[in-house]
Image 1 (tube, rainbow, N blue to C red):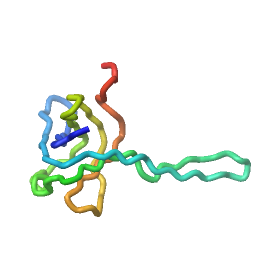
Image 2: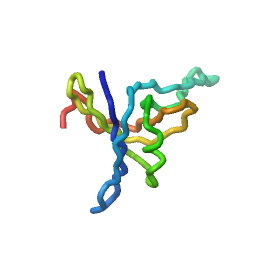
Image 3: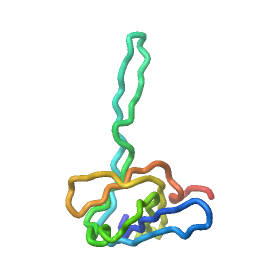
Image 4: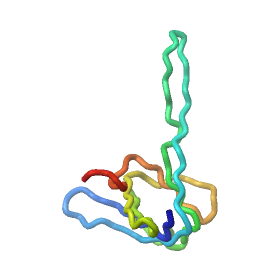
Length: 116
């Protein structure tokens, strides 16, 4: 995949226009979810999600991020090689990495091969 920009968007209820900003980046990397399993005395296992599946947007133009005053709840991007579009619902997460945006995924909106 080759991704050179992502669009962060905030969709609202009703007939209110979405806020959005397109940010240049070097790459987008998917981080798997992190779980913790706890076994009870009766042998049953309870899984706790410690961190949701996330996208790391690396080489992001952080100056552009400083311009937004709204909270993104969608991210979308296009793979320049396959021309496939991806869109996910979720939220921004904290990261200590410089020039990096972390977006925790709640669920996919559009991914290649998904029927609409």
